[in-house]
Image (cartoon, rainbow, N blue to C red; front, top):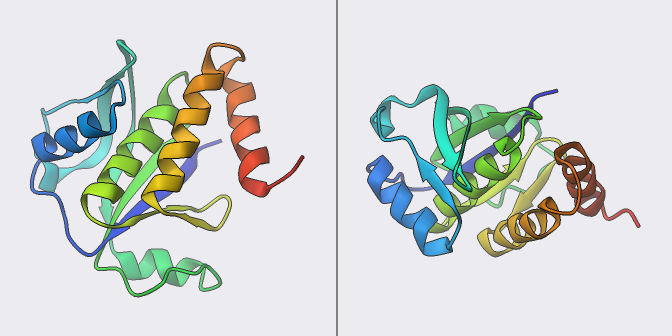
Length: 157
């Protein structure tokens, strides 16, 4: 099952290098591929996460279509830009996508929207979630991590 999150913002980063600096400043072990220029992102973006190959789908989207899809979500205002992240269950995909979206949202004063949970994450909340995922990663398998994330996001005991 593919999952989807969005980084919503009122400004865009100018390059993969600028995005990578944002990731580095968060202290995450994620290295984006610089083969595709940022403005041309459309499809699979290879990355290295924790020194292993991984990746996720990444596309520029029309923000209005994201917000119109679920009008019950508290978006705050009409965001100008949306960057879509799609990922599956392979090891590192979930972490990579969330790290990339979190760093992007912080660098652009934006938010992360989780479509599965219909929830907006401020950058601090998203970073905290990623750090919890990473701290649990060595103790449980990837599928269990995804289930744990969903349980915590839903506020289930």
